[in-house]
Image 1 (cartoon, rainbow, N blue to C red):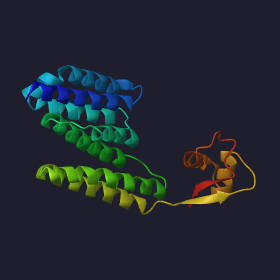
Image 2: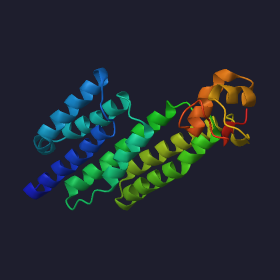
Image 3: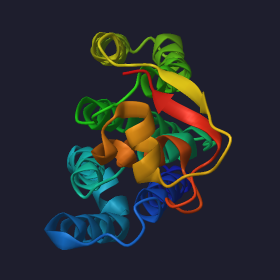
Image 4: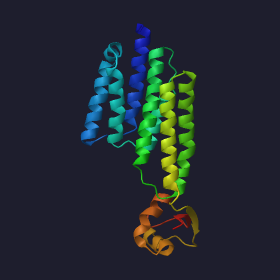
Length: 224
């Protein structure tokens, strides 16, 4: 590995780790502290670990895992994936880091989605286009590089995520439009729509009102 390749690889690593931390905001708790320590250590030792061998890849994967445990959302992890995708390295070490980070992000996204509770089919439907595009790009890269192990792993992960979401979407209600002549509070609206005022939180989540006392006259509710 040339010095130029090493410097580029370290820079790529630091760039992705920076996004990994930034998308989590102010991380707290034990997992957050562990993540900060792991990222700091890898940023400091990336050059030496890259020269030494396998420890670098293990430590990088650990940072992604700790980010998920610390509370990274699907959107935040996908921002990390996009940041890695946007890198334009020239040297093989940095290219390998880019591809590895993309694959790590996809793996963590799969676990995040598996642990996510959805309330409507539309929530899942909105994810499919994004998931399809993300996986397609990574799969094409693995195929172009003739990396059979990564290719097969990505195909398997893509199938598992897609099947899980499709199966969980089937029993979920759909979003339908409501239309009332006057604004009303979320509690009152939940009573009118569901005959259950305790479901006001669902209406707030689906419509994101400025204030729950003044829900939109026209918005979305669950079909059941």
